[in-house]
Image 1 (cartoon, helix red, strand yellow):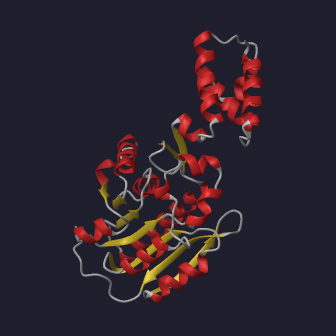
Image 2 (tube, helix red, strand yellow):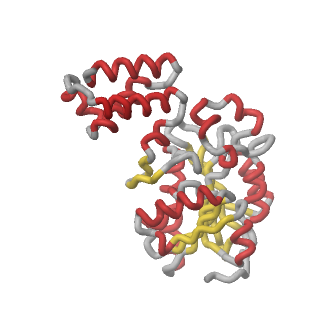
Length: 298
């Protein structure tokens, strides 16, 4: 079978299974087997696949036909200017989270300049693959980062990514639900960043199969109204933040007003909400009013 024939057959198989962008995904998977970029495949359409190549391609296509995310099959996903390993232990990084990383990095730089001091302390709460913590550590080279997650499996993946990308020495990964590891360790940070679970429990069943059936529920389920994690962050951030501490959060669809109210009620000021590329309210930043914690800053 030629590469062209294999690609046509795979595309038809994925279309039957309702895979979005079936032709694109079939081509990416064929490129993975042949070791060629997708855009170069037309140059190899006449190539006759070996039995080993045919078997490998069929196995990958079958996984995608089962609606396993393409990123999990490939094993990696681009984020900012680097690649992270991804699999079913953690959410696949989205473009919206890149906006959160950019906002957090800009905020961190501004805070360092205002204070004329090095050694910014940052916490990434619910780190997943570690993409946020790693992006911040790469950009803010004098910062120390704590990354928490309730899942030891996710933390193992995040550690692996940090090691691959050369920041493991400046990112400390600690297991625990949301702020618990920071509260228990007496850590006081200048900047708290989080992309928490924010999908209402009742909406999980209606999610795209790739998300519903393959990405970890723990990282998706935000409780009855999707706001459980935000409530915990708003009420618990005070003892974790140092004097004049800030937060930067990713928001779910339609949640901006409710999350803003939660943080204002908890004593945060200077609340700002930024849109994503589609114009939806996606990123919220806020400043803790008052003196902040007296906790240790290791």
